[in-house]
Image: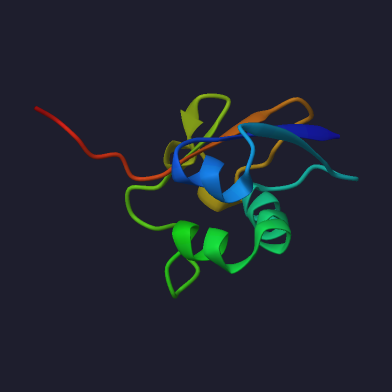
Length: 95
């Protein structure tokens, strides 16, 4: 099965790509995908995404098919073939 991962802003800079397809032998959870990305992109990616307790940092948004995982099953959200997973860093700005 294949999942498309899309990166925005600083995550795009860390990974060096806008998007990539990740293949799994069986249906993963979001936390399985994150663990694989830690292995692939190393400590800076990990530090940007999770706190010292291993929880996704406040203001980081992870979406599956446009839905925030906070309103699904969190890191235990099960992924299906063809799902799109988006990683957004904190966003600030205004007028």
